[in-house]
Image (cartoon, rainbow, N blue to C red; front, side):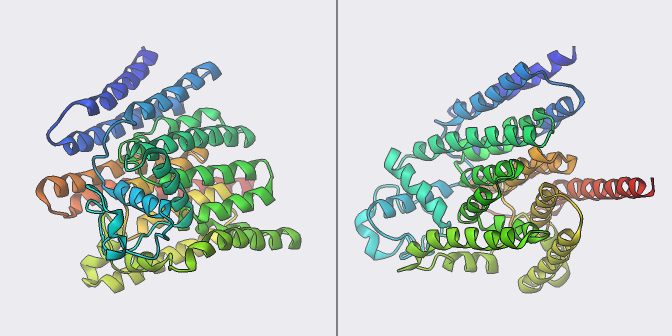
Length: 427
């Protein structure tokens, strides 16, 4: 009976993904409500995963099902985001021998590269690209593979997602953890929809991050430092775990940790910095943008000031970072917590950002993570409202439903862990 319920949910998931082939007038409606339904079903799936043993053969078939879900969505036109046009444009610019950090898409210098859809469909055409160098390599390869089609991005994402799932499986094995938790990522609708419908770039960075933790689990520290450097050039937020690695190292290991990632990052950034500044648009972004934020929104209500709200949010995050730095928690646990707290305090939290939490939840199971990668689907309502009504408006009640369960669960988990550790010390 229980097995039938579990398989019925997996079949329902399959049907939900196949529904995207329907020729709908407003596919964003299906995307939004489907994402919320799939997130609810995902929590039920995780309850089954957590409660019951999964034999090795069944686990392999369930992982394969997660890959099949991804393959099904490859031909689907992106729905909730137009970021992929920027990715393709950056790839096209590079394919023509031009640094994507030199000119904004609307610069007349690039007029000879204009086509029917590019750069007219690129968002924020007055800004140079915000995406880091490793992502730029991906954009170039995707353009070489499929030109101005999104298929190049999705095919590369399929390769990297399979690698991510393999790294999760092997990391759990090396850490003597149950490999069934690979399914937390493999079956999660968040990476499936964000990468294989909307083709978001985070999927490429997560693979590098997964490779880093795999190498750490094998005690291949030198190689892990190199991969961490690559990871930083794909998504700068991965640098957050860098200070955690510095503690308790021998002098030789400490020097390697300083030198290897630094050289890796420099070698990748320098060619793009000769006639461009890779951080120009990022600096504009971190100063001005805010969307779907929790703590930041609270401070906005109190101060009604963007700058002050950012300062107070940043201060709370810094306090959290210092607490984690000096705590005795393992690296994986610290990484999970710092990423989760970063998004709780961040002024901007798009759904695809939380795919990083999905990965970390798979190698460090937490119910707060499971809930976060599920409740974030609520934020798709904002995109739906914007696409249909041309209004981007936050709803405080929706934000409450989105973040409050995560914060409460996180607090409960930490209190329980503290009590458990205290009892161990007393015994």
